[in-house]
Image 1 (spheres, helix red, strand yellow):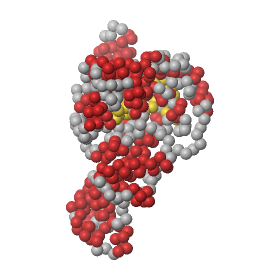
Image 2 (cartoon, one colour; image 1 turned 30 degrees about the vertical axis):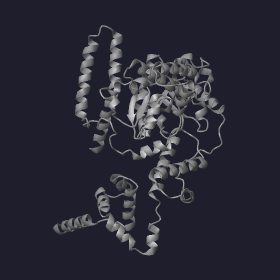
Image 3 (cartoon, rainbow, N blue to C red; image 1 turned 90 degrees about the vertical axis):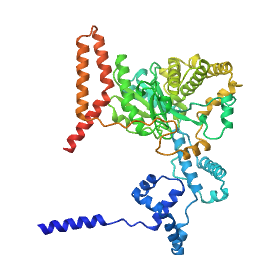
Image 4 (cartoon, rainbow, N blue to C red; image 1 turned 180 degrees about the vertical axis):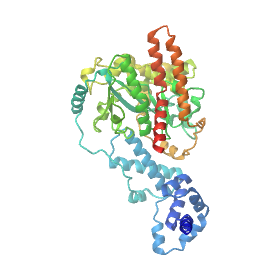
Amino acid sequence: MPGKRSLNAAAIRSAKRERKAITLDVKLEVLRRFEVGEKLSQIAKALGLAVSTVATIRDNKDKIKASSQITTPLRASRLTRYRSALMETMERLLRVWLEDQSQRNVPLSVTIIQKKAKSLFTDLQREQGESSQTEKFKECHCLPHFKMNISAPAKEDEYPEILKSIIQEGEYTPQQVFNVDETGLYWKRMPERTFLSVEERAEPGFKSSKDRLMLLLGGNAAGDFKLKPLLVYHSENPKALKGYSKPNLPVIWRSSRKAWATRSIFHEWFTYFFCPAIEKYCAQNNLTNKALLILDKAPCHPVNLSDLSDNVRVEYLHDSTADSIQPMGQGVASAFRAHYLRRTFEHILEATDGRIQQRSGIAWGELTPATMNSVWKKIWPECVQFQRASQTDSIAQLQQDIVILAKSVAVGEVGEADVDQLLQSHDEGLSNEELMQLEHEPAGEEEEGEEAAPALRQLTTRELSAAFSHFEAGLQVLTSNSPDAAWKLQVSRAINDAISCYRELYSEKEQRSKQLS
């Protein structure tokens, strides 16, 4: 027995001494990735290597390149067929642009993608001073894989019939049918002829007018309930939020590097914000706790949402008709952006703070029930009580108001055409300049002007249990001495709703603990 144990120990020590052989090809690939600007940790993850190994290869760059020069001609010719750093950068930016187009459900063709790729290549040449010719790009460039919608377009009048049958089957009322959609907002952008825009274009460096965020806007078909907007920005803790409590903002603040909604963000929104909001709304209006949510097939919308709730059914629009019939795309986003721009000029006139989260919340609050209801006429005409948007949400009226405000604050010559051009620009895809700006941003680091988020310690089940006991004791005091029976129910429901996420965390920890034991 002692001999057997010593043999096993020896085998283990031998296994520990084994090292993975790294070929010259891999080493050259590591160096090539460094040359095109990839980070050390990114390279290690992509190639399945230890970070220390990648760092050693980088430090021995000269020796590795010298070794590659004395390899056999056949091997050398194969190793030197790598595309240039310029081509690598162009392909990386093109993938970002394709993802942006996909996020917004923009139909694409091979011709459109090729045209964008050529323009990116040309702009990168100009920026980097490359002498290579566009003809070389046309010969060797291969488009990255991208699934394009080339199916035969569906008729607009087909889906309303499908939706009607779903509504009848589920016995949903207009108050229980919802739609949400993402929209972009260049929140610092001003009309082109204002002094601010003219001065910004003359200055080098990053343009604040390119600072983009995404908003998820939505409400029900009755028009009487607007959901709290989800705002996704590229920074989690910008200086604009300093001193503000995020749960108390008029928007749900989330962040991702490219200011896009991701599946994880949408999943969280659906579980922790949408479903509880529906439950509360139905209780307040004496409705059965159920809802129908209509979505397009954007990449950020998970396909299994219906499985996450017993009370919410999720239906997806056809790709080819989503843009033309989706309610939130029929004037809600445009009216919101017009209200937002008007609110921006009002803040300038009043010399008030007017931070992004405040302006967004106020602008969203200004949309009327008539507007929120009228946009359903293409997809569910039977529920529409208002055939047109409210006059206060009329784009033409809002543009006139903005022009008057612009003249009042003396920011330059601004006409209705300038305002219209600005409002339309929010729907444009990422420009080459914006794509190149994204390329220069450091990945995984704090944005300039961003407050670092404090590190959070994980709560234990014992701490959570103690906290719940305190809440229950406090509720007992309030409810046993409350002068009004309605207060008891209201306070109890509000507190339980507020801490529901902690109860779920407690359940997950308990379940995980049982599995481990």
